[in-house]
Length: 524
Image (cartoon, rainbow, N blue to C red; front, side):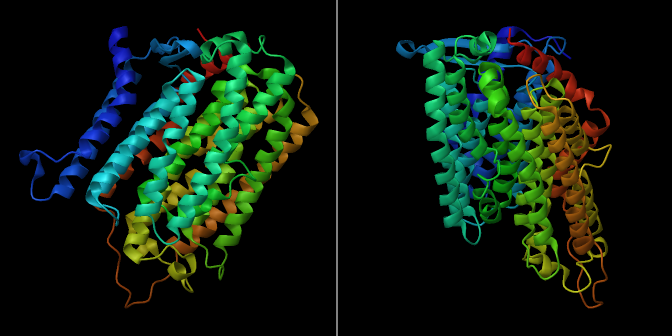
């Protein structure tokens, strides 16, 4: 890695948060004559690629300058008083837990902007689209960078409005209803979460996450911790989403434009699980221990429910939508993340953080691929695609078929790819949960979760068989195979899925020391 001055690191992290907002404001201004080119619409889309590219470059430099020998230490910190009366501070920082999510967010937003430059979504002005995309990026990056409970809430809420408009204005059939369901569910959950955050900060005497983690719940009575975990947990669980608070997700994914689905699955769902690890586990450990078995139970129900819903959509004659199927698969995959967190062990929490990143890479790739498939065929209906013998994607667009099969086997947790390690570590964590948790109960949860992996393999292999295999009629034209811009947008996700699967230490080496210290009670 490289040696970077601390003040430069502080600037880089601040730029990650503020840069996209400045870019969003610039996107709404008239383009200078020299930058308009032949099309003002293309100029603003190019602006989106440029700004997200700069943010990705800053995130990579931040990761290279990060002290990998001390990933448990908060780095690139900025701490400025903002609202003295409430002791609310502009406190930014990153450690081994948040750094991978910062890079993942910057990467997926850049790839989405690049894809949109060549394939703009059908809808209103690209100016508004690019501005909303950048505001969404800023809110997400801020969620992973801020270290103050009030700022966390503000960042957490910032992403709702741009995602609502991306679905409502650039989405497909049923977009208005899906957008309203998305905003109502998440806003209602957020109201409850705000009450929990205020209770925690007022009773502990600080809204600072580092101070709360170091205190490790000693300033909060058990009853206050229980109430705080319940209130904050509901808001986080809606965003994750945890069964049975998940019903907004399939509609939102089905209606959203391709890049909206990529960012919703790849980044926004991670904000909920990140809050569990960053706030609830260290700040209210006794309250969390009370609810951990219930969280694990909901998690494994979500794993099995998501897989069964996908099996129902994948079967012949069900007229299942492929985007909807992948959305339900996210309910199952995020169930493994919640199971790992519920174990309250370093093994389980590391597995949850690994599964978070793996899900972002793999499901982001899947939504990109399904978007490309819909562009070529005009449909994501499995029965319409497969007809009697299968869609024969291997023969009609070999590279696209291969990529879809690769993403499917990565999603089912094939050893050697990124999807394997997170799920395995979450199950290992359930095998030996933290002290004070019922081992027989968690062994049961582990068994149910393991059964869910078999169901996951079943529905994904059915999808591959129906979409990629089969014999197309002789008069059926071939589809356009992977285009150069699609290759550029999708290749990084394929490469990182393989790298994370073959070299898990690259990620676990960052998260493990930070998790160990977080669970022991303290962040320095």
